[in-house]
Length: 236
Image (cartoon, rainbow, N blue to C red; front, side, top):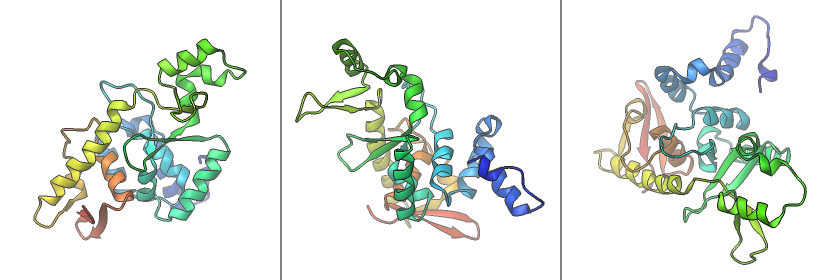
């Protein structure tokens, strides 16, 4: 995406667009909580799926007790790019070009996690070695949680995201906690800037992660007001 926003003429709009994209790749931006807050409220939506994915990859919550590479929920993409047909089409192209890998999550709902292939292979270089895997390699990968056996056919394996078990529980509990919090408010709504500062008790993931998920899945909706963005419950 950086090539598309390279050096430009004196156009201020082009400069602003380039700055928005490169800001998400800047280490100094990611280390500044105030700037991160502003980037979320001011850049809640995008017109490009890959830009949205890279932004959410960079802003993936820092987890203390779990080591897992950044992933993005499919529902979060729907909250960031309003044209769902465009999202699905661009996602298929990115999968075909081996930029991404998509995983079905065992949450009891139709949840899918999107991970950049570079992140997946970086941590598990054995997967990129290629060639025929020996039985001991398969056992190693199963024990590490990198692949899982299919229940119907034990000779068929699925790729998996290791160490994600506790996070799956946090996704479900965080959804319930956030919806319960908003439902207890008089008008079932709250300013985004204030809501994002709230801490969840039952999820290791941050509020921003759950907000994008619930907005994209249609449980929450946002409304622009003169004082900022309001988040309200759309359905329980």
